[in-house]
Length: 66
Image 1: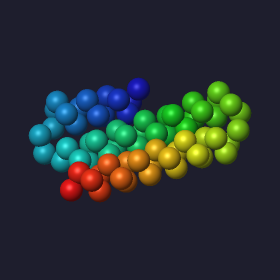
Image 2: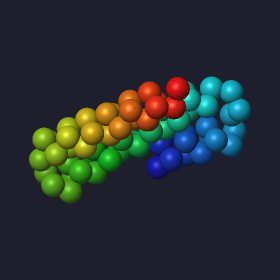
Image 3: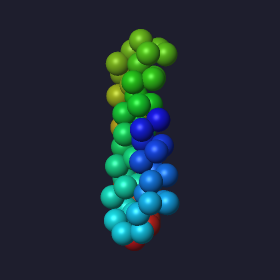
Image 4: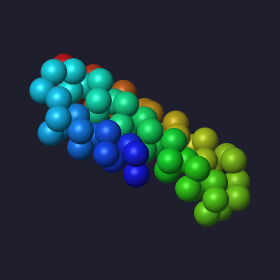
C-alpha cells in the first residue's frame, strides 16, 4: 500500500524528480509482492523469483524510457 501511495505522490505531488518517486514506489511494491508470494506459497524461491522478475522489468522499463 505504501508503494502505491508513493507512486501516486510521484505523479500528483512532485513535478520534479518523477523518476525517483516512480522507482522508489515500484521497488516498495515489488518487496510487498515478494512477501505476498512467500505467504501464499511458503517457498522462498518463488518469492525471490517474483522479486527478480519485477526488478528486471523495472530495469527494462527505465532503459526504454530514456
